[in-house]
Length: 242
Image (tube, rainbow, N blue to C red; front, side, top):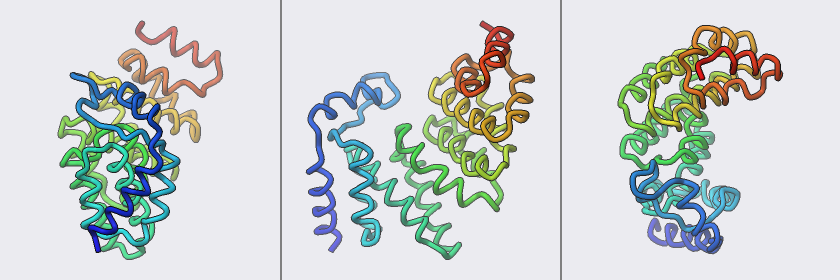
């Protein structure tokens, strides 16, 4: 059953390959030597196409097939697994079953299978973040302190679920932790989440900026202030470190 289902899913997914994308994605997702996605391999399938396949099979996927997709060498197969896991989590109404899917997701993160920014950004807040809305969030800080890039991005991206509920405590604290971080991908996601906070509560964003603007990585600052009115943007750009 699982073998035939896996074959069927892969056939559907692979039928959507665009050769030009297969050539472009390794550069776009930085999979060259020494880059953050080093060694990743791409079929050349767009996210909308992967979403279509996810919708086709999420209701009949089994754990063994999901395991095989997460363990795949192909980026798009792992992305498909992440999107199907989002659907499985959403369909689970029992908190115990939801927790099982969250634990499964964290296993994939710790085993470096949720290992590029698109996989993280399309899953973290929809699984881990959503689950943690009414719960203790210490796991986010454990993920951050692993020092592992994708675990850290999962921690920060998960706060999007809280931000949408006007809960800013964790993005504030995680963004503070990220201030000395060396990697651009952490600067970007931190700035993005701060911007989302500002979209809902500009005072909260400006409080963070007023305290930290001189210590913020330039990329984080630019992402955070992107939606502010131009005079306010210029104020923070001029008064932050160059």
